[in-house]
Length: 287
Image (cartoon, rainbow, N blue to C red; front, side):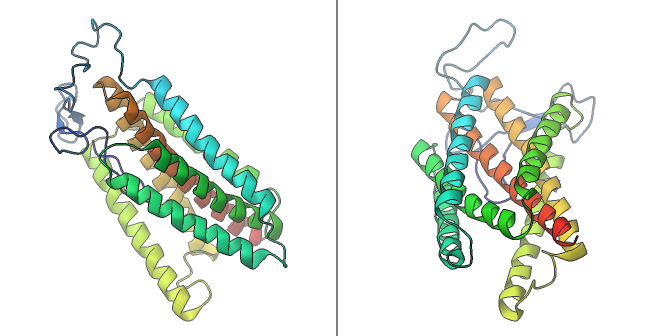
């Protein structure tokens, strides 16, 4: 199963023979559903790959859920640390707002470049992933401070709680199989995300040419609608991320691949937080 993010396209876990991501095949448990897909084992040549989930002994050198949790905590912790530093060091008052915004968007550009470099590398590089997290944190810190100062003092805590609620809700829905990630689901989410991003780019272009909010996708009723769509897309990509992690653990992905899981989950959570923050800003800005 190839997992992607609404912001950046990234490949799956360990690549064998130059192939990125997971193969898919008809699941014997699918009950004849032509859209229910189960991944075949991309780690068949891995000496650590699990051959019998019921009888296999404990393995070393392979990814576990503890690895994923630990790396994700480190990556998200780096984002938070960068955000706190930016919040304190880059004020958004009238005297400093131009400089602070300039640094923030410069940091966002660096984070984008680092993320793209990692996305096209064959193996995860922790330095790139943590560098992305640090610069992304700087961007989030300034944007969050600006929203708190100029829109609503409670917007940031609400966005954080909203992001946590989406994460918990999707995890519960995924574990209870209310959400089933298969080829059809992934294809639909990818198509929707591409359309969403194209619309945002068109809106940005019209905004740059004509000023204001362009086509109105970032304010008012349309802004609220697209904010909700953005959060839903982020939730869908969380489910795809969970599927990727589950497959990697099941099929014995190398332990280093847990950094890719942390990278993907962090990007998706950042996406959800930004969309939640924007939605709350629109709602409270209209009050």
